[in-house]
Length: 108
Length: 108
Image (cartoon, rainbow over all chains, first blue to last red; front, side):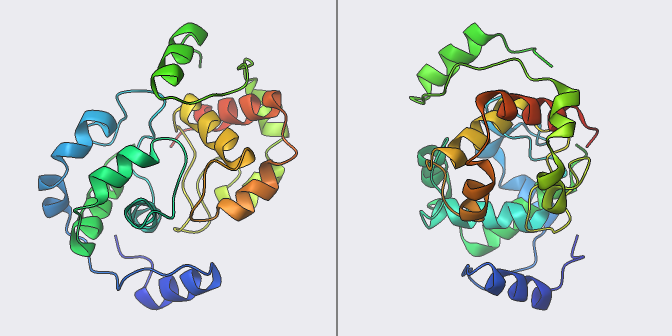
């Protein structure tokens, strides 16, 4: 799952003028264990229960981490950002890495 | 691609306290023809060229339309929203429906 090195990711993020906490390696099994509150809307394997929500299965891991950090830090607004901000408020950097690794690993 | 009726979508959007323009039926072929400026980052068939960008292939059509309208009207911020706002500024409601239909139709 780590086709993008931390160095390349850091460079890309700098280019995008974004700032993220140090990225931890995500653990798929840990992500699955932490995904119960995500599953109601995004599905247990990343297939959304409602067409207004995004499928997450097979999505790019780095993008998922970026989105989760964006919700948590309030930088991402629009759509269901209020709901997502509440769900991500208690996530650690490791939780975000694990959840991103889990959903990226699922078959679309 | 129209598993979600306009009525159900309207109800869901009302529930989400969102407001969208009247939704036009999307045309897949027209969407493909209009997708050239999307392809550099999101790929000709919706597979992103960079892991920091989301794959769009097979994503839910209604979610894609919601995202594009959110970028266009400025309600969605974070990540590459500035870039996306520029790309979506000139899109009509029909363009958004067509692009959403096209990417939703692609194999993930």
